[in-house]
Length: 114
Ligand SMILES: [Zn+2]
Image (tube, rainbow, N blue to C red; front, side):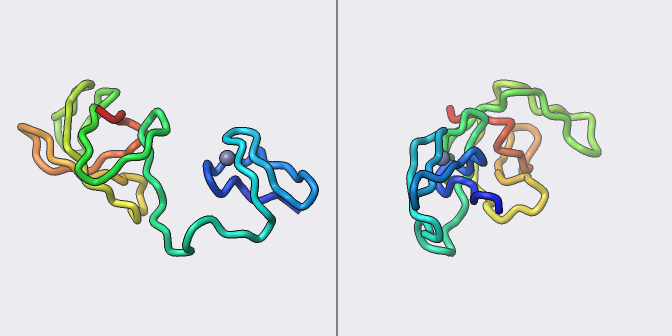
Protein backbone atom coordinates (compact mmCIF):
# COMPACT_ATOMS: atom_id res chain seq x y z
CA UNK A 1 0.00 0.00 0.00
CA UNK A 2 1.32 3.43 -0.87
CA UNK A 3 0.86 6.38 1.42
CA UNK A 4 -1.16 9.32 0.21
CA UNK A 5 0.72 12.44 -0.87
CA UNK A 6 0.83 15.28 1.64
CA UNK A 7 -2.53 17.01 1.64
CA UNK A 8 -0.88 20.34 2.26
CA UNK A 9 2.18 20.51 -0.02
CA UNK A 10 1.62 17.38 -2.16
CA UNK A 11 4.98 15.90 -1.20
CA UNK A 12 5.17 12.16 -1.84
CA UNK A 13 7.66 11.48 0.97
CA UNK A 14 5.08 10.96 3.68
CA UNK A 15 5.41 8.32 6.40
CA UNK A 16 3.35 6.75 9.17
CA UNK A 17 3.81 7.82 12.78
CA UNK A 18 1.35 5.80 14.83
CA UNK A 19 -2.00 6.48 13.26
CA UNK A 20 -0.82 9.79 11.86
CA UNK A 21 0.69 10.45 8.49
CA UNK A 22 3.57 12.89 8.63
CA UNK A 23 5.06 15.03 5.86
CA UNK A 24 8.79 15.64 6.34
CA UNK A 25 8.79 18.54 3.89
CA UNK A 26 6.22 20.88 5.46
CA UNK A 27 5.88 19.15 8.87
CA UNK A 28 2.15 18.72 8.38
CA UNK A 29 0.49 15.82 10.25
CA UNK A 30 -2.92 14.38 9.69
CA UNK A 31 -4.99 11.28 10.35
CA UNK A 32 -5.34 8.82 7.54
CA UNK A 33 -8.57 9.32 5.64
CA UNK A 34 -8.88 12.91 6.80
CA UNK A 35 -9.59 15.45 4.11
CA UNK A 36 -7.96 18.84 4.05
CA UNK A 37 -10.50 21.57 3.46
CA UNK A 38 -13.59 21.02 1.37
CA UNK A 39 -13.60 18.46 -1.41
CA UNK A 40 -14.28 21.00 -4.12
CA UNK A 41 -11.47 23.32 -3.08
CA UNK A 42 -9.78 24.98 -6.04
CA UNK A 43 -6.24 23.65 -6.43
CA UNK A 44 -3.58 26.17 -5.55
CA UNK A 45 -1.53 27.50 -8.41
CA UNK A 46 2.03 28.30 -7.43
CA UNK A 47 4.85 30.11 -9.19
CA UNK A 48 8.37 28.80 -9.86
CA UNK A 49 9.27 29.41 -6.20
CA UNK A 50 6.21 27.64 -4.83
CA UNK A 51 4.50 30.92 -3.92
CA UNK A 52 0.72 30.73 -4.26
CA UNK A 53 -0.68 32.98 -6.96
CA UNK A 54 -3.99 34.81 -6.99
CA UNK A 55 -6.16 36.48 -9.57
CA UNK A 56 -4.86 39.98 -10.24
CA UNK A 57 -1.31 39.27 -9.07
CA UNK A 58 1.60 40.67 -11.04
CA UNK A 59 4.24 38.17 -12.07
CA UNK A 60 7.44 38.32 -14.08
CA UNK A 61 8.39 35.77 -16.72
CA UNK A 62 11.57 33.90 -15.72
CA UNK A 63 12.63 32.64 -19.16
CA UNK A 64 12.12 33.62 -22.78
CA UNK A 65 8.93 31.95 -23.98
CA UNK A 66 8.46 31.30 -27.67
CA UNK A 67 4.91 31.75 -28.80
CA UNK A 68 3.57 28.83 -30.79
CA UNK A 69 2.86 29.66 -34.40
CA UNK A 70 4.58 33.04 -34.37
CA UNK A 71 8.05 34.57 -34.25
CA UNK A 72 7.21 36.55 -31.14
CA UNK A 73 8.95 35.82 -27.87
CA UNK A 74 7.86 36.80 -24.41
CA UNK A 75 11.09 38.13 -22.95
CA UNK A 76 12.40 37.12 -19.57
CA UNK A 77 11.50 39.82 -17.05
CA UNK A 78 8.21 40.74 -18.75
CA UNK A 79 5.77 41.81 -16.04
CA UNK A 80 2.13 40.86 -16.47
CA UNK A 81 -1.07 40.84 -14.49
CA UNK A 82 -2.56 37.37 -14.33
CA UNK A 83 -5.86 35.59 -14.15
CA UNK A 84 -5.78 32.01 -12.88
CA UNK A 85 -7.13 29.09 -14.88
CA UNK A 86 -7.23 26.32 -12.23
CA UNK A 87 -8.88 23.73 -14.46
CA UNK A 88 -6.51 24.10 -17.40
CA UNK A 89 -6.02 20.64 -18.90
CA UNK A 90 -2.82 21.48 -20.79
CA UNK A 91 -0.90 22.96 -17.87
CA UNK A 92 -1.27 26.55 -19.07
CA UNK A 93 -2.87 27.66 -15.83
CA UNK A 94 -2.40 31.42 -16.13
CA UNK A 95 -4.18 33.82 -18.44
CA UNK A 96 -2.57 37.17 -19.08
CA UNK A 97 -2.27 40.01 -21.51
CA UNK A 98 1.19 40.83 -22.74
CA UNK A 99 1.91 44.33 -24.03
CA UNK A 100 2.52 44.30 -27.83
CA UNK A 101 1.52 40.62 -28.06
CA UNK A 102 -1.94 40.36 -26.53
CA UNK A 103 -3.79 37.74 -24.56
CA UNK A 104 -2.01 34.47 -24.02
CA UNK A 105 -1.75 31.55 -21.62
CA UNK A 106 1.30 30.72 -19.57
CA UNK A 107 2.42 27.97 -17.26
CA UNK A 108 2.84 29.04 -13.65
CA UNK A 109 6.21 27.26 -13.47
CA UNK A 110 7.68 29.88 -15.84
CA UNK A 111 6.75 32.93 -13.77
CA UNK A 112 7.49 34.32 -10.36
CA UNK A 113 5.44 36.64 -8.22
CA UNK A 114 6.51 40.24 -8.80
ZN1 LIG B 1 3.73 18.49 3.17
